[in-house]
Length: 188
Image 1 (cartoon, rainbow, N blue to C red):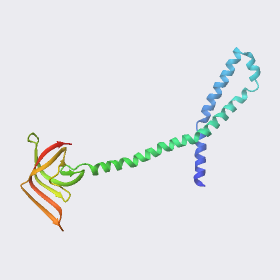
Image 2 (cartoon, helix red, strand yellow; image 1 turned 90 degrees about the vertical axis):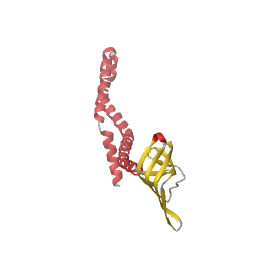
Image 3 (tube, rainbow, N blue to C red; image 1 turned 135 degrees about the horizontal axis):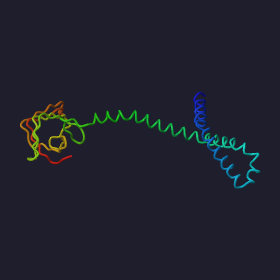
Image 4 (spheres, helix red, strand yellow; image 1 turned 60 degrees about the vertical axis):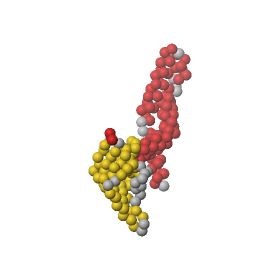
């Protein structure tokens, strides 16, 4: 019951807000045209002389009916804009948080879009087509025989000085590669 009362109260407020300004303009325009036409057509004054007083009331009634019919559309348009602004206010911070969480970390390596390890101290030798890492510490998902992404490069490990694997029940949990030399096979 309360929501219905609020709706109708808002409907009337939107319908009658500013309506008198339009009514006064329409009435002034119509009366001016009628009065001006009396100069050129004297018979207009005979016909309208007794009914001219009713023109502002008819204009008021027409404007009010129009405003009553248009008020729900105006309310819907206002609600649509405010809803979009509320959504933008809620979605904006979430998008920023997602961007922070999904942004590539500068010392991470990726395979198939997933972070699979981290590196320490790299030496990019772009002219020679290689990148040398002091260490690569990878999780069990890292495939050393497949290509991986680092910064804006696609690399493939060609050799390493030493490697160690940590296994649990036969499954690789962690792999470490020292002095890993990786060939540059492309750019992202």
